[in-house]
Image 1 (cartoon, rainbow, N blue to C red):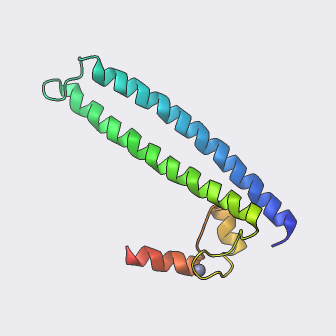
Image 2 (image 1 turned 30 degrees about the horizontal axis):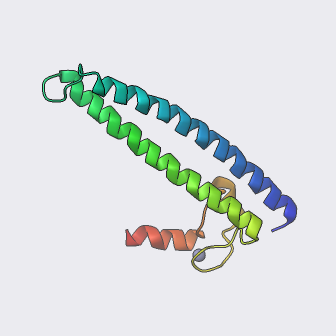
Length: 122
Ligand SMILES: [Zn+2]
């Protein structure tokens, strides 16, 4: 991979990182609002019909939060590999991940074959 390509992927990753951080910040404020709605006593899960909706919303938002946190961690690991010089190599077989795959998922850690194998084992 040429330094120009690496620089371009770094730019893509940094852009994704900014977007993910913004999404996490937005989710954070919804979690704060939900927590406030839950603790003000009006949203009793047992008696208030809105209570269950609130719980559903809560688990949806915290699930998204965990997803974004995972995305952010993989972006940070990819940026770390760029600095260390191992970017674009599969973590399992050490083969090239492939420019097309990195184009679609700059934070990809596995080549398509290893990713498929990992998917099947699930
Ligand atoms: Zn591989």
